[in-house]
Length: 355
Image 1 (cartoon, rainbow, N blue to C red):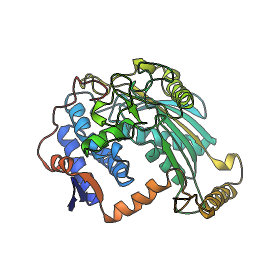
Image 2: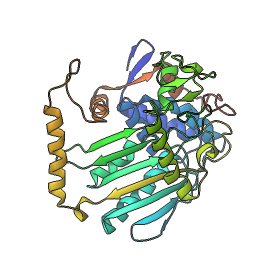
Image 3: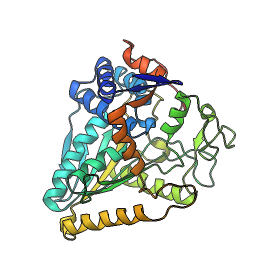
């Protein structure tokens, strides 16, 4: 453990164990707590602190107050050889969505493709976690999910859609798959939370305040902005339709709030689209082509001010490898909370979306 300027460097195994214990103390079963902690450790190791330890106090509070089903009855209902819906019964998002992915992977391997809706889940964390797993099974994958309204639509003055992220992966002929993950906002809400936890300002292109003006203060954020204006707006709309309306779930501004009532289940939706390359082309040739693309991009002369051309999402994977070896940077106050006997801080329930 090493402390520097408000952050602490923590061994990955220790961090995962601390989070697991906290979730179990809040009420989760051991397997559910362990998977959730593994997922959050992955996020922090990738440098995506917005989806890591900064979420623990909120999750623990929701779990303790009944907003998570501690014993979900997860049911997969195939609707054809390559489609189906997993009812997650509002279990802990990271755990139930990982179970749902198992069904999708099995279906894709048997039929060549799988389009699997994930219904009635909680906040599920980083989508790259799931598509990376699929790629490691030799599958190309797309994942997307809806979230609560936090974004001003292009040309609008009120929030309607969520950050609605999506992720993509493909296997390569090397050890590391191609993995890409992004929100359809300029930045995910969790990035603002991370800036708050570290008392750092944010770029004025991320969000607006209560008057609709750009802000650099993460505490003043009252709406996020779509990436590339109308293009991001269109993408978040598409994702909301496919992971919400298509599954018979609440959509747009009707999606449940993360903080409004932590005793209520969230009923969120997610969608997996998995493809077996062998059903489209020679799988080894496919991996070779993807790897060739990566090599060609890496060998391209970088623009002025850049050291190399990286793949989208690649630097996160580089950070992951280093952090799992050398330790993960965590806000010191969060680390102290994780070590304490306090279950949660009772600071989120009843708050607005930008608590």
